[in-house]
Image (cartoon, rainbow, N blue to C red; front, side, top):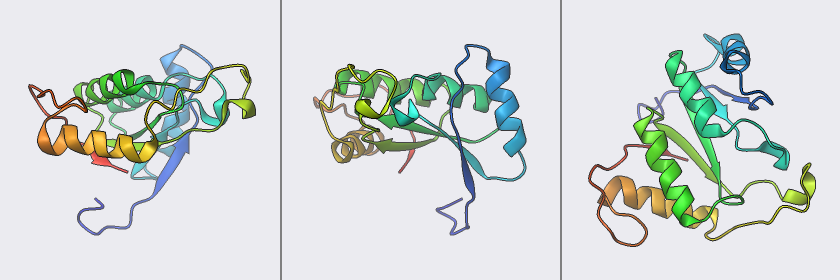
Length: 150
């Protein structure tokens, strides 16, 4: 859509505090037809919620275009790259890579911040995986993910 020059409308879906997929689907259904894509947040406000990867996959299952947020606050470079591959395997085509809210703002202020790499580096990592078919280490991927990176 963006590549075609279209004006795109998105909305943010704060992931639920439930393991029940129906809870996520109910929230997403309210947005169906009103937006082009739905942002699935990654522990927004530094509060624990369903993972953005799981929420994005649930939207894919219902034919709603997700934008998966992925933060560097909670994961090291291994976990970030694994989540990117997992998202691609589950049909997630749009990702937004960010730092994440500081843990002191949330309900687990004693949690450790990871920040192994920063959000700009993660954008470079995701682009390298997509465009050059390599991990941050330089090792080749068998199949590159195809993402729209934001």
